[in-house]
Image 1: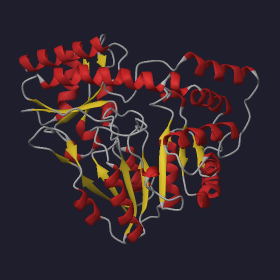
Image 2: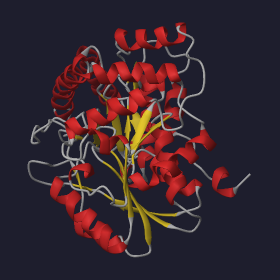
Image 3: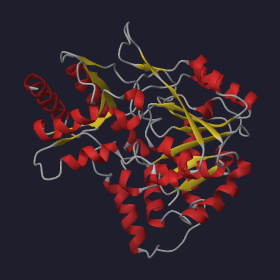
Length: 395
């Protein structure tokens, strides 16, 4: 076995979830997914595809119908290039995580320097390491005072200073899992301009683009690098059907790449998965065609969940957090509870409350906890806060 593989850390979120095995009645907020099932019309499209016998290989880059639908969707959010231009830049992948791994395979050689803004979903740090890269973390900072106290913010100057001509790749996830941090358009433009000067590639994980609550953009989505980049910039943007279309278990995503690399990405897909399953792609076509029946209502519901949970948590003595602008997570710390992994395990066993430990997302998040608020019933969130308060009172 390669040393880099044996040295990979196991998921601390899974470690906490394993504590819940055999414990009835645990309120599970540890994983990053809604507890709502995929809408019926999307599931029906997959069933109809299977019944029609669509069980064979497809094009490496995805069905033409799906790529066309994604191109139209992308043009709707980021108008200008036109559907045809977006189409030639798209690659359908077997999940967002598969797409991100493909991006590392495409760009990273052993020994390359990769900068990652953290705390972040651990896969984004592990993937370049698997390729043999030297990963340098640039941590977000916690706002210590003012109206945004408890929020995580980027020191833009620190990030730009860390990116040099020796930096092969910059990886960013915004809106961010776990902190809810988002990038402004001016920050994206500054980062892109700097990376043009250094020759650095950018991989932007924007799977939470539509789960955005600040309302300061024309299309309601978070600002995207696609809004500031040229088509030939050294930029790859990753998306997924998981979050905005309630399709986590379907494992389908897509990448936007420079058109000159689309054929190269097709080769990598061939050597990884060959293609995404046709019936899953048919479901995604339905999701794209009728997305206005899913995503706006989902975002409104998630905002209501956020606005239910965060004030309740802020009212708990010793808890520190800010209102997240994007994503589906409340990220908070508790005074006097620095060992978040132990706290998360004890909350499962002693309070029936399942949260993710912040240390799963990077050492700078040790002492923090992530709460996924994507719940069908907001009252479950209130019940969870009651359990947290009871546990704190007795601990």
